[in-house]
Length: 303
Length: 303
Image (cartoon, each protein chain N blue to C red):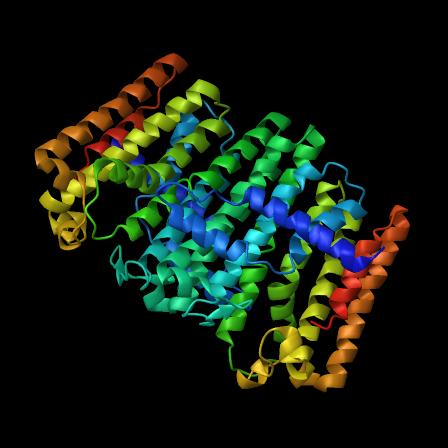
């Protein structure tokens, strides 16, 4: 398997799925469609929809049509959270992935509404999957997937983490609060993605719990790597300025444990994730080498 | 039936259902729970959850537990839309129902997040109804209700109307655009409520279309009355200043057709709604006199 080639193919497929689910830019409310698509179709790694699809494949799912609405939905949720994060009242960012942010292009009112619209449309899109279910069993899997889609990004997941992050900005944090923020803000959507993929392929009980644990550890490791790269990375490779955490007096694993300590922690969490994936692959008697490689790249990534 | 007494009882019951679904104010992210509850539990007519429950009863629904999560969800969606409407970048309102608005009390960042949180939590709450369904039939009704809950408040419903209203602020509008805004901004959530009640009680096909039509006409009539009261009402009875539309150069049915013309239009739309309700009640061989009175009050209301 040529990983890079496979990654390119899959990313392209996801772009097509997103395009198919994105609103057509017509009607009196055209501006909101334009604002939604401006941010949704701005590229990016498409990591979360990819994790849905690859976890579905790991668990032997064979009716991919039912997965597509959820792949689009999770990317809409991720995108809404970025639009609202960038707002003047929050991070006040002018650029995201090298493009002007939503409120700079469309104005603040429309950016707020575009975020609302994407969050709402994520659920509208995902709940269309009921119409694609081929039998009652699959119908019930869609319902379970919707429960996950509506809980992990919410107040006991991503939003919960975002709130604590915003409230404690500039204050020193202890490891417990920092772990809470990481698990909620970063891991929750990764858990959401992988659990949805698993559930739609029929997984539940202990297998689903393992997926959740694996995803949680991937998220934490990913976040620690991000904090390390903010100190050791190169702005050219990262595509964003470094030392932003130091500038914002942000507590990270690096400030708590130093570079070497943070690297050891990242390694620790990635190893748990990879062990869990290997364990699951063996138990299921099936493998997804692409998913394994994707996760390895993710937790030992250079950018 | 003493309508006022019944209305009081039902409102109280809805307050209890909302309380039961509202988040407990504990944990690191406590502030967001407080901000959500500050706006959610601020009183109000609770019209939308009431319409869900009464339409469910009209269609002979008998397992009310499954309706409660949707009643809470629709009020969360209504509340999030008010919090975001009041933001400085939108209407910049300092007061709502005699209380300071969310961003005045909790700051702009937290108000944006509280709105997001309520919208997301609405779907989290409603999708718990799957766990309450007693058989596959009811399970499927919950799925259908979720599809309605995720579409009517969205870009082809409430948000769509809000966008056009914001974009054309201060511009003269023709009747077509004005009707679009009314149908999306005001009718959509009323349609959403009544259709959810009907669907959960097992209605579909032509009966469901009639409910949608009835709700649409209630919404339009309600909105025209609102515009008339902004000219003819008393600030004391309304609890808000009058002549705000004139001040904001807002096109309404009153500016298009004058007071008498607008009253005739309101009468026209209410009559369609009431005729449809009577027709349905007769066809079903059952009545909901409370719902009939509620709608009459709504479309001929004094406040």
